[in-house]
Image 1 (tube, rainbow, N blue to C red):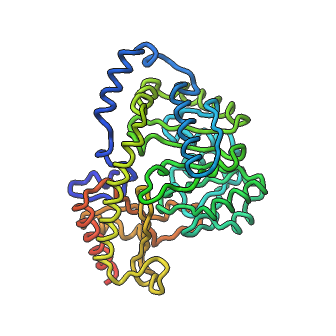
Image 2: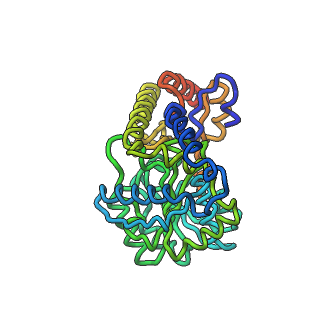
Image 3: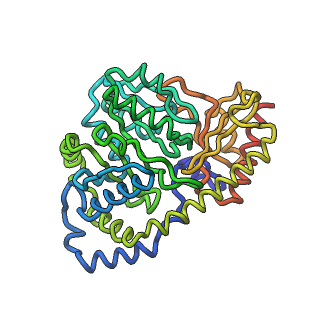
Length: 387
């Protein structure tokens, strides 16, 4: 973010939703309604569990989404805990499940913010081998003994943009149930699919063996800092205790705003507009990359080590790319910034055996014209470093 504050920088770096998607008029109307209908309740201290109607709405939507994917998930509103962003959800789970030197399993690579949330508890974070379809189940089986939990983002993962296939989800659920391995499922991007909705949540398949994290940031507005946890009833009281110790409760006014905006199926009308925008920007980035790196044939091509390669995410906000052999994304970054474009090097997203050639490119905040100019600048930086 500091780099992108420089004048003229086209940023593929930030993991920020596009401000074009924020439903400003709806929030303006919701503010007036909340302050008219229940100003005292909205501005007073509130229950640590969260605003009751919002918890009920979250439970109903999760049940409906799972049913649409062919899985029955009986989510009880009493299992829903409203959090101050899904990042707080990561922090609360870490506090109640991790002791010093506890083994925690993560994908390779994984969300950096999760590792940051776990780190104060001093765990032993262990990477599980992963490919385009998701976690390697055989490697998971080898590493799962005595693990406190597995942290996974199955849908349009940050940083790679990949999604776990249905076959891999079924195998993961079966292996976790067999070994008794709890799964922390983080799903901030699941609604941002382009062609097809993702399969049912992992937690829906084994509700007593999973903790589910969700967010309102990517479909409404991140500045409100609202997320939620769905936890087994045996775990919920400890999460609630940690929540009370952290901040008593998430802002009640913001919770009421979100509830009001989400009334009458608003997300069913609003989220498709986000998907259409992000898909057009993804397509623009793919077109620009193909233009400026015509020699590339995909991440699994025979020439992958000698060219710049990238994947094609089916949703979300990120594309994962890889530099030619012998290059380092951290070393490339200042040269790219000098040419007017920024990205995030991929190495920090690994808990072990980092790929120094990898990088994350976000396509949702620049315009289509900026995407084309930014990719051209990135190509210039790469070609200049190779020559």
